[in-house]
Image (cartoon, rainbow, N blue to C red):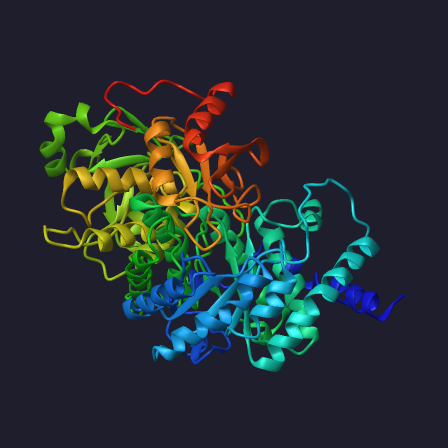
Length: 614
């Protein structure tokens, strides 16, 4: 057996010791109070990530990497807006070589923002990029693999041979980064897992974790530790589960595996939907104390990502010192590593079924209902279903034994929620409530425990807090009704509630879009194209459509989309059904109509109602 293969066998055979902890949540107190996960510090240029450093905000250039002037200008604009690390695509060695000029241009302007090369498929591009940038991002799913969607069984020896092949490809980059003091992100993406991982672990959060750990073990075997991890997905439930599994696996490996985490929801989309999905995925993890850098991936100009990211970081920071739950010993009311909905009993309130497997309902105050009662038909899907004051729900303090005993003594299940005005983290408070009351009682989730009466309050802040708090709990499987209190306007209250349910995958009431952010690889204008696709297909309830700018964010990154619209060449589009390309090189000006035809061919098309404008 060769020395390389022997080393690979050791990396593979001694990699599974943490498996026993994967389904047993040990650190339950961390999920009842805010405590930021302690990680080692990794230096990216002059910026410290992890350790005692603040959570860093990142973004990615949408400029063509060969357009030096535009790339430099965009990087400077992002830095001025508060971006602390900027990523640049380097899809070929030629693009990677031009990073020398981009970095030189940024530095000559007096800007010290660290630069990151984004690498997919091309080890030679990574080797070139590592000469010029402060950090290199590689995707373990495609760095040394050509995805063929092959189905095969791997023996342990065959699997170790694959690890050996990867080590041969990956080692030169690790050595160059170590020698030059260049950091690295080992960034797994759901849906772009290698055939090797797919065949052994499936397209699962566990597979995402193992994909990253394979590369981390190689790096550590070469005494290289300047790396961070990411577990990105477009589905917040998958993302949250993957990061929790990763942290659990790192803890099991040992104290010196405390590497920083980069958080991001890949292909979040645009507008309110993109911000809500980002807040659920990123915000939930930040509230649980995970995350050292963040990037909000919007299908918009990169400059618009920064205020969203900064607001999410501020949301997590606001939780420090809130609680009174330290020392609680209750077991968790959910499994952090495997989603299942809390099984309350079904009851009927105001003629609506709640709990017991019924869809999660939307509640509003009597005052807001009165304001919209005359225009319910015009609200479309955003209908109020329950009125809070006449619902019979009981509000309690989950720390109060008398309150809990009173609820549990009730002969029939009833709606229960947190009392307003409590000095509690919303997420920790509802987790504690779910753990202490009997499971038969359905829960009403609130975004905040303070009713907002300020009409001038910034809607973005309301949206992000509501999505992070309620979305986190929904992804834990907690909640039967949602009640938005942080927004004053009735229409926006209803829209926000329904959009949180949609983005968390809890209740699908409209078309679901997976749209990647623009970058230098993009082969068409993503923003205008996504808008046209929304206009044509926005009435297709429950259909999931992926809009991807290039093949890198193509069949793998689309994950579980029903249909895909993917850039195949400049001004040419390939159409997908699931992960299978079925139409090739369609002129862009015809592609939306051809997508509609494809949806019709597969029986998923319905005509838009007369009052729906897309």
